[in-house]
Image (cartoon, rainbow, N blue to C red; front, side, top):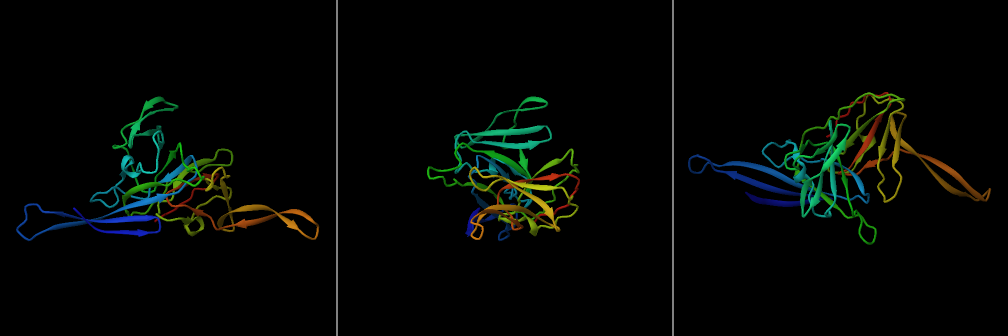
Length: 267
């Protein structure tokens, strides 16, 4: 195997490998396979971050699910940081110790269980999980980046939804499977309920989450600010409906169904 090229586009680094296998062929015959290994730099100042799976496993199958241990690189993280992956039985978790993800005990309605090996748990592109960090910011308050590694994938992501109601909403953990920030309103949403909402975690330390509502066929939120009224010589509240909402690369959000059963395809 040899490195053919190293490229950087924004915060994405890609390594192009040429894998040359020579089995029992006659002289001069080569079987070649090309893979793209990518590294996504994620900036989050939050202690608890919803992390997206933007890559596939580095293999001959360009869309294979990737191992948890290989997806989240230890660089930029600290010993004691914990990964939480939700499952039908509750969640599995691993703590970083000396650059290795070590299984820890988790508690659910079914009791206390031991998580499996991070090398054996795989996640498909578009899945979401949590990363809890002990030190997400440096001494100056700037976010310390962490990195997601894997192979670029081409498969579309189609999240599965369940219909909720106003009295019994259903929360869906979704991820931005793209390696770039994505405008929520640039996606093709179908089947959205009038009372459904989207909750995006804060992009700033200690900031409030953003709750999007459905209005005029799109998503947005009301931004209320105090502005000075020179005529009345006092402050007044000015509200603006904001529709340009970005989900950062490598992160996720909550979709709350209160009657809707949406269909969404994310490339």
